[in-house]
Length: 87
Image (cartoon, rainbow, N blue to C red; front, side, top):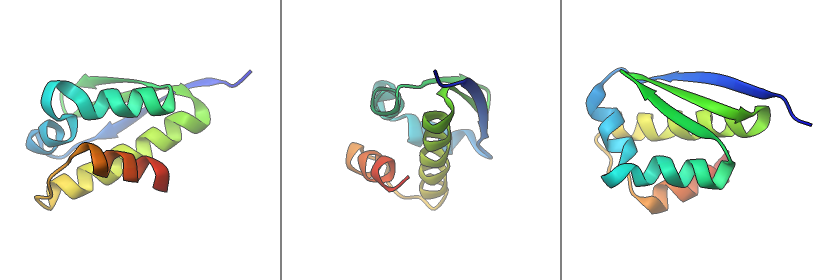
C-alpha cells in the first residue's frame, strides 16, 4: 500500500492560479481524475494529497501550468493532458 502524502505548490500570483484552474475548475478536476489526487486551494497555495508518486506528478504538472500561466500562455485541457503525460 502506498503512503499518502501532502505536497504544497505555491503560486506567486493569484492571476496565474485562476488561469491554471480554468472554467469551473475543469483543469484541476482533470489532474485529480487522471492522477487520483485531491487538490485544495488555500490562498496562493495548492495542497496536493494522494499516493506519493501521483502527488509528485501532480505537483510537477501544476508547476508546469503555473510557469506557462506566468508567461501569459493560455491553459487549456490539451495543455493539461500534455503536461500530465510529460511528468
